[in-house]
Length: 581
Image 1 (tube, rainbow, N blue to C red):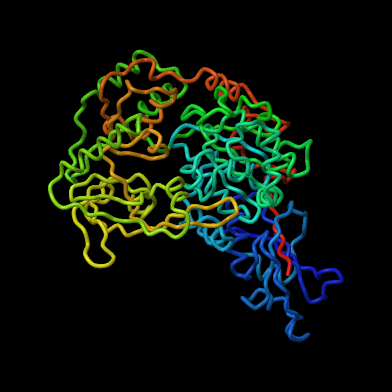
Image 2: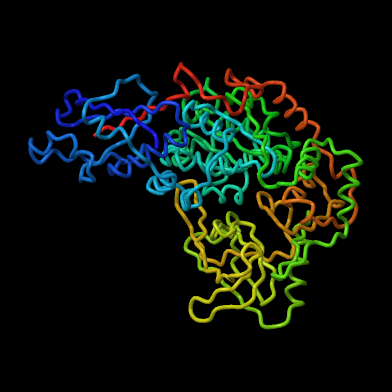
């Protein structure tokens, strides 16, 4: 239970006197709690979220009913608009403030408010786990301090969780979500960066990209209506493209002297993992941090340090050294001890998942294993509404899913997080239901006692203009083998990796970090030291973060990620909310 101070004052003319404006000041509360309280209050008042069209205000039916401030707190026909402002210094109010001073909020309010704002379903569909102090500090920088931030961290440190908390609270009308690839963008309900910007491949350089985007009314409208641009998996964005997009933003937003035209950037990713997809116009690939506009565009670069996926301290330490390119021959020898290792027995029938570096090898393994199974094959055809090509490119749901009893499968979206049935959960098909809504029945390793009939789920691909295409398909994938790229972001309990075919820096780290510990890891083939190397430029960049990075005047990385509860001045310590009727 937290205590909140509320004061009431009449609106100044020309607003009618009976309209009151409560002002709420929350002191020394974490930003997540402040915003959850705001969302709970909005729901209670029937509030219109920031950025939504203003509805006509109904005038009071009579002076008698309008004169009672308490009536405004009831879920009446009036609609309110919430505005987030710097916290003013106010004194506790009178009787009305005391009556409303003790308030509670629900941790699920943020997800509810995000759904009301029209946020992507992938973000708002479920209540989010709480943040740690260092994760909350990043959320503070994004939501309260309004900083342009790049935040990073090792695999399993909660980067995606921070993004989801931010997206659940940022106004959907002025927040754009994007990523360098369609799969990464679809995970957060966004679009590719090129599609958002309206620049296409941008192979002809910045001038042509600006001209192309300027010819698109939709692209110009997107750039001008957006205030916050969230980019996930920024490590796969080429540095030249980063510079191109900066030029486009300056031009289309009419702010040539402001990086990205004055947008607040929220960039997330780990440069130690997958590298840029391609260079611009056939040029050599560059990391985004090597772009000329990188440092001027950001106020802060921070790195999460705590790993939550693995509990084995020795395994976490080894992964940390592999990530930084500091693996020793002793680390390679330790991994070799897992070559051909017998994994824990699997009475649930779930076999280890093989991670391979090439898609062709993965497809060959899955097809061969499926054909080896006896019994009839069941085909699940997708039901599409919209652009099937866009759905193919932006979702993990196939047009046709071939399954048999005994097929090794993996969930491709969250089904029941409380039971461990999340994206990446492994299982085996044991049966099929019959009838019009036929579904595979899967025994999952996370919940083997209760087999689950996996129904079709709705998969969405969004165009830059906001139009949606939908596909209804069973959210499963064959999982005898997966590519390292597709496994990024997953946690796999029984894992089989092949490191001697790694061809990119970071591939071995991505593969190994899917495991939860040594006991669930089997290594196939050798462990060459070259596979455990990191990109030298990336290592130097992160070394610079450790030595301090000030960006364009913001907080450097050498400052604490989780500051102690601040004293005045109140910025960051108090968060003010104003509700106007």
